[in-house]
Image (cartoon, rainbow, N blue to C red; front, side, top):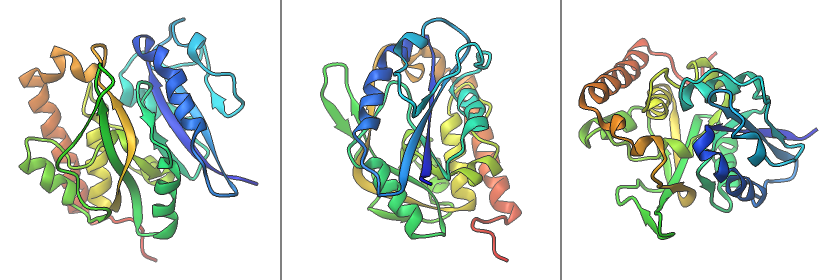
Length: 255
């Protein structure tokens, strides 16, 4: 029997037309013998806008009429965990694409070291004109020690040195932490910091994600940078990570 990576995608009506490009990038992934991927598409709400863009493939699961009420991408991803049956969970937003080899590199990092709970990779912004731009602050290829992400994030204007949209994580670990935070935004950063509070991670310096910049994305809206809401999001994200670190729970759990 094949071992499985569950790829989780939150989608809403405006981003649904990007799904075929995300699917193409998934189909181009090459995994080691004995491994497969399963794509869970979870709509944020219930509309008729998503279904026409969902590929017909037995490896793709979409449940029209049984999606959750609107709550944002973090809620949608967390609901998708109810159907995640793989050993690992990979995030792929509807408007993004995986770079060639991304899944295999993530898998190799976690299969090769039991003390690694999660992995991220270099991301390139894909701009509206088709050009790409990288982030100059990427860490070196290799492990990320516990607490390092919070320290960098706090010292650099609440910007992490690794991209949470490229996250690959052990399913049991993301379940133990309750999935994505129940926030209107920054829910993925909140999970990333929580993971790093309890576990070492891994960063792949090879490009693993093409992160689309477009006018309809949630992070491009004025509400995303509203000072009062942003301050509250950052405060609760930090408080959660610090509380987890203070409790002394660690992955992997020692006998």
